[in-house]
Length: 541
Image (cartoon, rainbow, N blue to C red; front, side):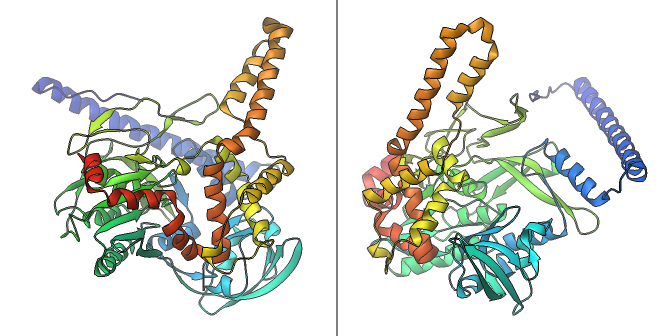
């Protein structure tokens, strides 16, 4: 990546810089026009002369996706359906069945039916595998079959699904779905309020403000703001949420880009709700983007104690640009910087390894908060207080990526009964059953150590010799044994994920948050910290 060179103040040098810059722009413009002409000619000739019939739309879609694949994963081409989904995510309202689904080639898996909405009322449960929508088999549908579940209010769709090996059908009447930015808030104790901010759609700051006002009316003198699992959203809402706790005119974010008009400073514009209430913000590895603007900003301004695990590390800003025929390009236009001047982007998509994977930053620069505390860039937002059970690692990531935790929770739900969330308990024998389940699934994943060992073994057989190769193989076996042992070493972290998944099956998301109030490590630690003024203030000083 090119390093920025400081501008000199001498007039002759500045004039040369302007001249060179203009020449560079013209050169780039010519190169862009040249490549467009080459591609247009190629695309035309290919479709006219190829031996078999081609599908121009599919070819172009593939070409665009492969081209953008060379950049960061957030720069995306949005077709007309994607544009509509993008609007829905930002507005928090749409018409459909009210469920989160995961798409596969031959099925849609219900990940979470929203309590009280159409899918829930029709009896769908997490883990159900939808194989047919109306008269359309999911396996025969080329695009994302999840789009077939959307439709006008009061329209009906029949779905066929598989549950625990049994095929069932149900009729679902679509309805308007409102996705709340704040799905839950309550009192942890008589003086401590708790707000879950799950996404940064257009409702985020207003719903957070109303929740805060209500909690203060119920006696809240301190607050826990939960951003765990929040993937982000609108930059403007991140500024507005931060504004609830800091004065008007405070710098929250600076964006820097090669395009001058995208270089901006974002300051708070409104009267704050409460600049004095003691505040703890919870984050984890799935807190990203706008969540990191809020947590990073409040940390840099020494306005809140950040508690949990290191955040995701997305310091890139996207903007949708309109194209023709109702399509858009969601393009990364800049990097954002917190008030202290740090960019928390953790992955370098412009300097990849030999396999084309983005390289994770390992060298961090030191910055200081308003009170002079040390903070660092390049690796997400680091919490002031770490909660071990919120940490993740390659084992937990692999268990989730292979749906081991999700599938175990599905089976568990049909084998156990609980009438109330207060009755729920995940026992030692339950965890033993999980370990047995992992082994039955022939679950495997490759650690970085294994990868290096295998590369070393295969590097030069004749050079290493038989004895060395055998020792390498012994090491690989030891690593494999270590992975099984890791199920015990990381029991607390894994059990946390299991409990979250299982409780949601019985008592929905609302029940999970109620369970958190009395059982969650992060919330209990936050409550204790907020009750200790000297310890709380000591961290911020």
